[in-house]
Image (cartoon, rainbow, N blue to C red; front, side, top):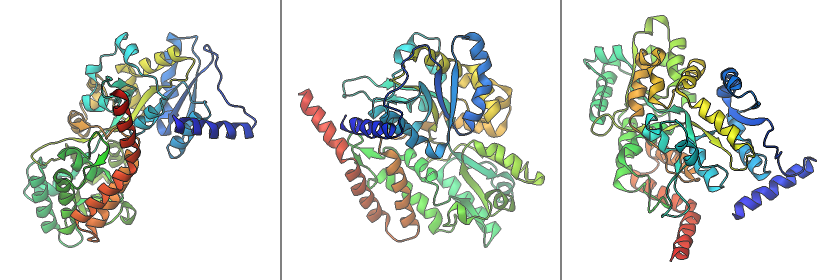
Length: 433
């Protein structure tokens, strides 16, 4: 609450200096303000003619917000009481804005609608469920997934065949054996996988496969415990054994050229690279790549649950109109058109019945992986911890620290970051007694 008041004082001061005053339009019949980001903002307007035909009395104003400034812009708008009616919100930002009490829960509206929640991939939908104010409170659904992002394997199918490997790896042991065979065949300058050190997602996915990253009600780090240590040791071992080059993606001249050249056979990435590989790989390589679910310790396992959701802002005076737009954008047919415009993957299984997805072999692996995704820890501090996790791993890869020393240090750092969270939970527990 103190942070909320401080943010609003800062926002009001800034607006006053600009001569704008503090507050927002309160006309319940005014234009609906919808903030969208990146390429989604560029194309969502093409979906709106049908919405306007159904709801001629609702005027929608779309504001395009660059991803690079979106987080700061949203916080500034919150502080100045000038948030939009609804917006696109990255899944990892939901806990922060939930803690600010800026988002309207959707449970009652969804219960009164025809939206079937069981049509959503469970792990993706779970990113939108936030804990209640106390342990006794039921979780609240604060958004509906708009599009999803997860990570899996892109691989050179021809290199696997040449190394005598008949199918993509399903477990860590199979994957490691495949990398050993491919590197031995390729020789100097060739590797099993490219895992850029400035991309945290591969290690993060391995860690999710092992279990909890935080402990004691998400108030302390669990990085020095055996689960995360297994993930880190597997990850670092790929570098230490020469199966992955210890470099960032900026040190690779061109990821797609090197993939085509055979510098590496495996690459962990998201759905956007389906289109990129089709555009950027040479014609003679178009039949030599494929996708597969991410291998886990004992077989196909979980991966990350990313993407963006549609949220309704608590301070909106136009909630009913905003909800109608969210419901429209969440329809199966609308999601299928959105996919056709953006290539973003839909979060509802029914939307995957579109031929463009159902008949597309690289996309089908993503549908398989989406059945096994896990949300991030639901704490506002997670993004900071996420980045520090990768910096820690980089020190282990570069042999600057042992995994034991590095994870103990990461736990201490994480515990300090989450100190206020522990204090708030203890205070809430005392108040409940």
